[in-house]
Length: 205
Image (cartoon, rainbow, N blue to C red; front, side, top):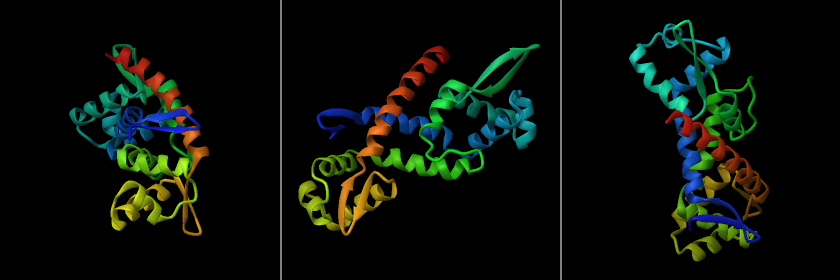
């Protein structure tokens, strides 16, 4: 299984999902989240200033800055011979689409963890197969999924639990269905972000 379809319309492919997962992983890191928090508070900062704020070695921060630029989360401009970093409104704005319930008052860590877990679940072919089965055949029980996927009871339980936790499936009175509204929304926003990410990375290269 390498794609999801709803009513014969392609929603996401496995390659697209893995690309999003990689982009989220670029941010889903304690140091890089700290860097983002510092830049958001002071808008334009040099690596030296970021180093001072985080009390880290500059050589350790530089690699993280490169990753954040590559995935369109931050950008830099030159001013007076200094490279100043700020948030990339295009890439960062698109990335926020994937951070469900995003709010400045809420923890990046919690929202990123939730969102990363969602895309991580989607990135597994077996999980995608379970979702597609439940798109086509809603309100099925765990034994139905075990039979369809030819997997053991513990494996089916693990897959279904993870997909419910990621809100990709719903569970009602012991029966599972795909969360098609969420999947359709993810499909649209994912394609928009990938287009922006491709443009950002083309310039970065």
